[in-house]
Image 1: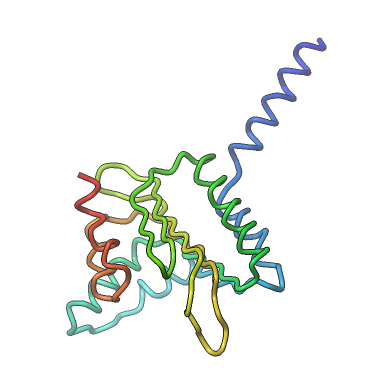
Image 2: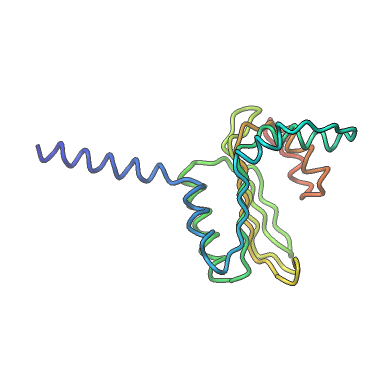
Length: 181
């Protein structure tokens, strides 16, 4: 009987660790005063996708098509160095626990950018981007040291690369669909 109880307890602990999700990572930091968070839910993306828009711009249409495949978008930013370091450590722990695939790392004198994905051959379930050690990034008078972005859904690599190139995101993100092959 004791062995059965121990097995059940161990199973619950293992399930608990595996259930660590981006949701809980973002929830942990979203409530902190030093952190700015943005969460766009699946309901908002569905609302956006169901709008009857007449779009004559192919780039805008590509963005709408991609938005239809997104189930959530979460962003955390902080300029507090202590919070930034903790967020970075927790993000790397999350990457390890979820066994996300490293897509690319870009380091220069301005920042370090990490891209990870939970993906199949041509589809991404989650794209995680961590930007650390930002220098000289100012938005509305606020400097940012760290940014964590998570996009979940059923996303095509090619569309993400196209979107990145059209939105002037890091040019390396536009190369993602080629790196996957």
